[in-house]
Amino acid sequence: MKNRKFLWGSATAAYQCEGAWKEGGKGLSNWDVFCHSDKNNVNPVTGDVACDHYHRYEEDIKRMAEGGQNAYRFSIAWTRIIPDGTGERDREGIDFYNRLINACLKYGIEPLVTLYHYDLPKTLFEMGGWENRDTTEAYVRYAKVCFEEFGDRVNYWATINEPNYETLCCYGYGNYPPNVKSLERRWKAMYHMMLASAKAVALYRGMGYQGMIGLVSDCYSIDFMEDAEEYRKAAGFADLFFNISVNDVCVRGAYPEEYRDKLMEEGYDLSYMRKEDEEIFKAGCVDYLGVNAYCRYLAKPCTEKGISLTANNTGDGKKKKLFIEGWFALDEDKGLEKTPWGMEIYPKSIYDLLLDLKKRYPNMPVIITENGVGNYDSVSEDGEVHDQYRIEYLQGYVDWIEKAMDAGCDVRGYFVWSAMDVYSWINGYKKRYGLVYVDFDDQGLRRIPKDSYYWYKNTIREKGEKFDGKVQ
Ligand code: BGP
Image (cartoon, rainbow, N blue to C red; front, side, top):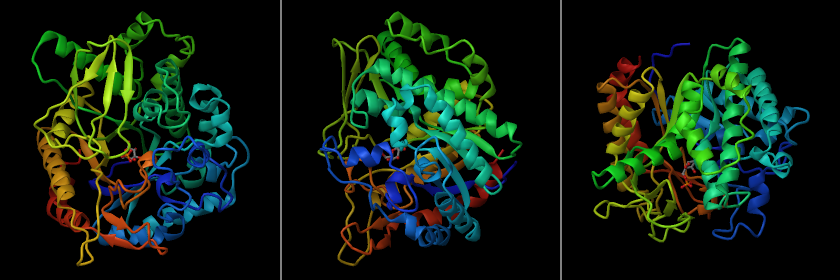
């Protein structure tokens, strides 16, 4: 399959936008349970209703098309397809995604479908989730149902969203379910996600489909403030920790030696890594790498003892803290602007990242599956949402992507996170990323396209032809 058109779109994920948590035959997920539990104590809100995309998908998709977008990345809720994770497929859930996909096609929007974006069926979660190898089998069975039901119309698939970031939150920061702090458990969960992804890729090809299947990886350009040997070493560990431990596996089809060596040296149990899996990884290399790009990371040598991981989920301006003895610590460039959640604004990072990826994986097409900035937006007196800071951020990223493409990087698409304001995991609803404002206080969940929505429309018009010409 060869699409000569550059994909210009925006993205969402099922739990964050659909709502209708108990409708249409849907089973419960780990996030449904977590958000209704007392562990959800930072911003105790839920995705029960969210943007009600489940009922309003058509108007949302129509608005994307009116904004000049030609693609939409969304995820399927596993719990709508197989409500208890392993049992029978559910017709009502399947029909919902049929309607959603058909609406995309009706408005000239190419769907890019993520199979798994953080929401795991409760039943599987209770049996250990991704720490349990059986989850990989359940996932492949679920993926097969999706390929069978939607494969005739979906040309772009993403197996798993962010194995690195999700497991870091689940088992590092401990702010996502199951809310634990154990890197040992994290390595294991991440391994099974990578295994599940590789199996799904091989299955998809084996079923004879011609579309592209990839994995979505949160990637970071890694930099350092002091050009010294120990800083470079720390940056190498940060690269291994955040990027290589996922990207090598799905692009090259093997775990890097340095990764196993490092984990073994630190005494982690790796008995779940089976010899026979090596063939599975080899057969499961992706067609494209989905890149979620938000910021760069600055690494410095870790001088403290132990491990400390603290996220900022309150938007109080504090930076997040991360140090891991024997690996690296996160550094800060005090001269750069940050969001209230502590994220650095540095658009050139996408250029550095794309060039790094090209160097390590020369023939791997990239789709930027998420890029965006979260902030407190509000409706002005004129009834509009003037999000100039978002326009500047996104403009910076698009300009640097263009430069990277001029330098030979094979980029096939760009998706803004997010299509509209959505539930921002445990950050709640105040941290907004959308091109379209959603009034969550309004019963009707009124939508207002922001200034950035119109900026995006113009950008697509201006750059569209050139970007199409660059599609390799
Ligand atoms: C990515 C996730 C998205 C989205 C985004 C913004 O890591 O794939 O689902 O939420 O980040 O993150 P947050 O909402 O936590 O600020």
